[in-house]
Image 1 (spheres, one colour):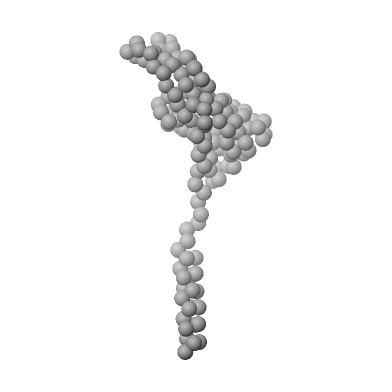
Image 2: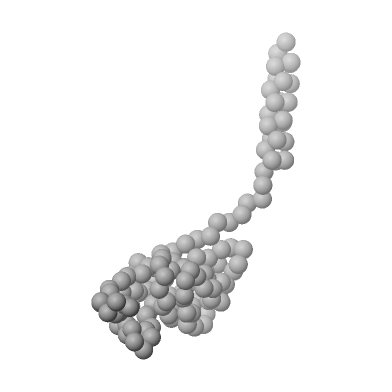
Length: 139
């Protein structure tokens, strides 16, 4: 009787292992999002003629499936410049972030960035009060 119980347990365990192996999907790495801790803050005059002050946080998103690429995402409809530098390779560039996102070939390594606002259209001047910034690692 004991040999039947051992055989039954072994076949159940083997069945579970086979079911897990057959049903397992290949692992897909989720994007890694880094929200810049310092928001860009600016002031402008809106169409009504009233002053407006706003802050925007920028997120740097990277994926293992896309090495060397960073997607910058704004948390609102606002256009900013992202001045980035890969301190691992020395590469640098400027990305113009409209809404909702833009990709940049930052290369793999540790990347730092400063976020600045544009001066605005001729009749609606904008002033940057505080530049934003952050750092992240790109696979």
